[in-house]
Image 1 (cartoon, rainbow, N blue to C red):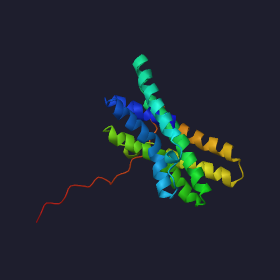
Image 2: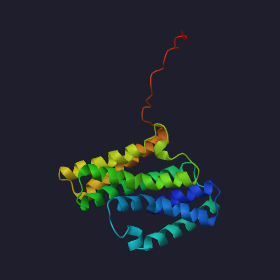
Image 3: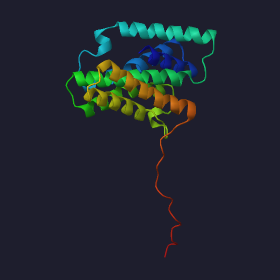
Image 4: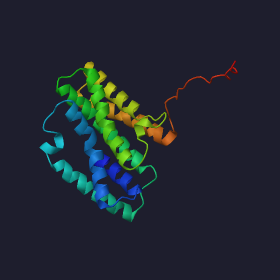
Length: 201
């Protein structure tokens, strides 16, 4: 959760928001995905309402991020790397919680993906950026789907939960880091180019 709060705080700082704006964007980035998951799965109370320590961690993380950026400017890809770490953790924990709620593996993959990407979508919208999930060819939601799918596959063949979770997170990170560092992208599809239209009669 802290890494997603860092990514939200960095996005808000790059958008030149004030202290309240940084705190709000950090918070919705960190809790947006889990809140969406809990509401869709009808889990009550929502996790951060049940345990307010989450909000305290988010606010402290946002303040530390502000302080850190004043001491040393963050590296160019710091937001992307923080986001990748959050995506990996939330995608797998979302899938785990969905399984524990007794739902089908397909729903677990979907909820894992929602948990991983929803906070980032809200962050990007609030900071006036095109959401990562909508950027052409971006390995983002695909990474979450692949990681959650691997986690569930390994569970299905008897791999211990912790090992399966670490493998799933590792796959998400591998795909996201490959996209960030080496520019790996999904193929972009489109309609074939149409020839010239015949002249009207």
